[in-house]
Amino acid sequence: MRIDILTILPKLLEGPFNDSIMKRAQEKGLAEIHLHNIRDYSTHRQKSVDDYQYGGGAGMVMTIQPIADCIEKLQSERKYDEIIYMTPDGEVLDQGICNQMSSLKNIIIISGHYKGVDQRIRDIFVSKEISIGSYVLSGGELAAAVLTDAIVRLIPGVLNDETSALTDSFQDNLLAPPVYTRPEDYKGYKVPEILLSGNLPKIEEWRHEQSLKRTQEKRPDLLQGD
Ligand code: ADE
Image (cartoon, rainbow, N blue to C red; front, side, top):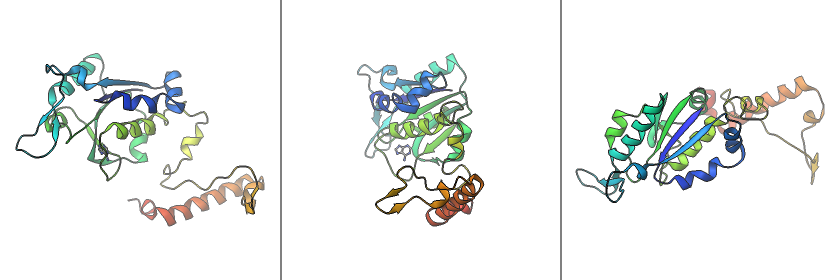
């Protein structure tokens, strides 16, 4: 899978993709992540990427030209399945969206800044608008990093043990059960007996019950299919 991210702050995104699972996914050739500095595409003499908004009001708006030119250059090189704009007014990201997107071949992610991008970028190019939650970040970069991480880890072969993505929270609309490792007894706080029993069917049954209980307590909305 190839992911092209358009940003005015590429440095902010170098860290999250150069470590751990995201780094390994790229080294294994399972994911290609390309960062594009929107400013490099500006034809303005001072390389500016924003301007005052028509109609007045506080806050600058990202201009069409550098973003459009960057997208058009990428589109001339390959076909894109989705052009995604990260925005607090988009569809709220969930595991279902990540699952669907992890099977795509090429996507572009645009991270916005200031008051956002000129609406015409959204109208002309964007096929999907995604929010990572009902709060406002100072830019779309961290949201783009969240989306990329959540998608890339689902690409087959990225995680060492492929089943581990299948047992993540949310994969069955259930939260994951509690997990334990050594020691068996920490200051009197013991690992549940069942996990030491070696009885795999019983352990699976227990885990499922715990998932249901946790979901009922913490996220009952998931059980109603909301
Ligand atoms: N940009 C700023 N806030 C955001 C959010 N919550 N989700 C996606 N992009 C954003």
